[in-house]
Image (cartoon, rainbow, N blue to C red):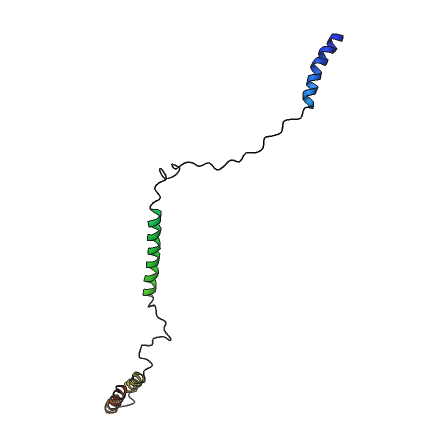
Amino acid sequence: MKFRLSVLAALWLPLQALAQQTPPAAPPPTYYAPYWHGPWHMWGDGGNFWWHGPLMLLVWLAVGLVIVLLLRRSGWDGHRHHGHGRSPGYDDPTSSALRILNERYARGEIDKAEYEEKRSVILSAGSR
């Protein structure tokens, strides 16, 4: 029995020493950089991007052309107008008087002789 106890003690003591040991500390985490797939990743050898610049330039030129065409079609000519449908000589008193005279003649308020007389007066006053 003495022999058995010494064999058990010989086996038990190292097992007890192993059980009391602390586990080794975990190594610090390492930083893994994103994996670069190389120049062959998506488009061949990676040197086929030279056309992106000229293509973007063409896209912006097309956008500008569409804007210019839309503005021209809408009647915008780049100048500010102060009113709707006014011609350049609208504020000229001669053209204003002629317009009124033409309207009166068209409505039949004046006859042809009176129209001709007043028209000649207005045109002679405008040429001074």
